[in-house]
Length: 284
Image 1 (cartoon, one colour):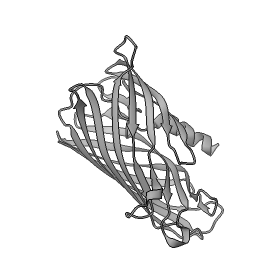
Image 2 (cartoon, rainbow, N blue to C red; image 1 turned 45 degrees about the vertical axis):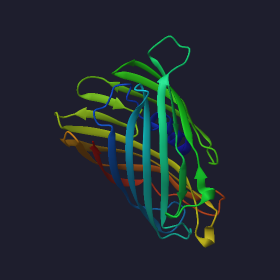
Image 3 (tube, rainbow, N blue to C red; image 1 turned 135 degrees about the vertical axis):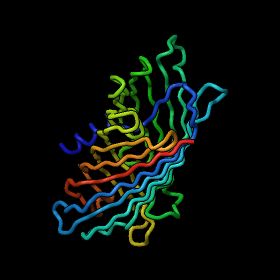
């Protein structure tokens, strides 16, 4: 049941962004998002675990031939693990990823409502910053976009992840602006439902999902693959401090968590717990 719920959350809340063809005044953005998972007991084992995750992303959007959007991004995620169980997990997990993506009208379709998107993410995920050539992967996603209007669009496609245990994952989401205050941003890098309290402050219901794999480089576990899974849901507030800078704070629950060696040499299954996070975004 837990695996089904986790997959359902992934299908509905898979991260991707769609901005149409409007030229954004701010072509570059920088996002920093620290998230803390408070101490949780571990199922069927003595001991406990707490984790801290920090995401950094810089993104630039350009135009190909003055028309097609080209999105370039650099992503770095560092996860600290502090656990007191008998499983020999590394103390840190590091994701290094470059993103390259574009969106374009569907060929041979006489309609301005259908688009296609392709995003490629060359990645190296290990337990340190040195990396390893055998940890190199090229996951990508491809999807179809139906844009009814500037206020409503639907996205459907798939993640393709060669070399992962779960090589193909479904992708489905939508964006819907119900009115001037309420919007559903499910086809987004940071899925959420937003309600504007005033011109600068909004209330958030946010979602997140992780299913990443890392190659261990330490001698005892060198070459082994570690998988880190969870999904979260929480509430928070977002404030636009000025035209170029916004920040949000949130708190909520972390569910269906699992940190395991893919070869079954050990795993930790934390109990459902609590997380708190901040997010800061600058555009220029």
